[in-house]
Amino acid sequence: MVNSMVQWLSMAFIAVLHPFYVSVIDINHNTKENAVEISIRIFTPDLEQTLQKYSTTKIDIANPKDKVVLDKQISSYINQKLQIKINGQPAFINYIGHEIQMESVWIYAEIPKIAQLKKIDINCNLLYDYKDLQSNIFHVKSKDAEKSYKLDFPKTTTSFEF
Image (tube, rainbow, N blue to C red):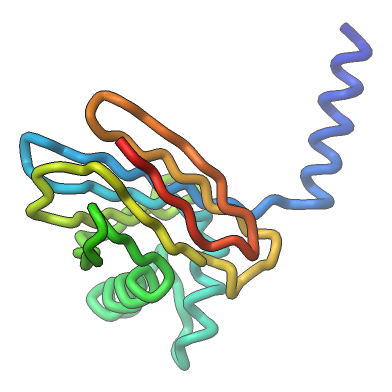
């Protein structure tokens, strides 16, 4: 018991000294809506600092000066850093919005008019321009199957077939 407590405290201490940089991207094929739904979870400070590189005004996601401008910045960044092909065809990601949940930003988007999802090709370098320790974890659901994959910097591509 004491040994496991010491191990846990050691791991917590190491985690503080060596933070991890990860985002989680959930992609779900909604057959009822004929759409691919995308949600992206990113730590708020990571996204703020990354967007700040492309802006001349201060980025504050929790208290934006202009929410419309912030949404445009997030949408533009996502569309630059995440490209998707569905069944071999390039797909445009429609940004829906974002919300803050504790220390994270959830970004929501969709790709409409997708009746079948047989294959999805992903090219992603989200936050690679922030830290070269970045990992992007994908969870893709289609046809009652779920597949996952982790992209670690500098790798940018993965594919899923259903």
